[in-house]
Image (cartoon, rainbow, N blue to C red):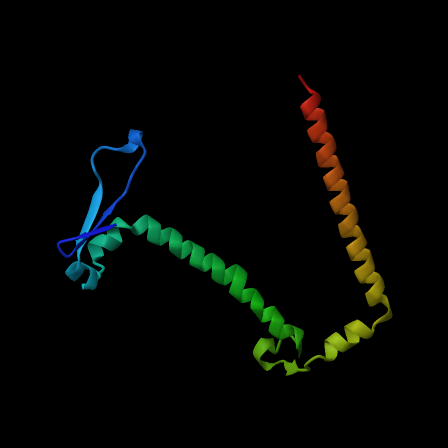
Length: 140
């Protein structure tokens, strides 16, 4: 980076196969201080980007359906939910359901069985994948 005659000069050095000319970027101090103004979005620009906007809309709808709507289940966890009353009018019971769940005798057994099945599945899948990888490696 060099300063000459009130100008900042930056040179980028590229590998030989990418060089087409001396690529230097020169800016004056006045240009550095000037704010970049945004160009207004026109209907022509929207029409040009219609495919991008369509897929952005699809992804936003996907996010609402699969990320935000399931959050209603969190509200249902703290209510005595009745479908005919809906989420907004069901009785709020707080942590009562969680106290009942954690004080249940079978809860610990259910958690233990779930974790055991997960570990067994993980080990079996891992071992099977390694065996198949070794078998494929031995084929010549």
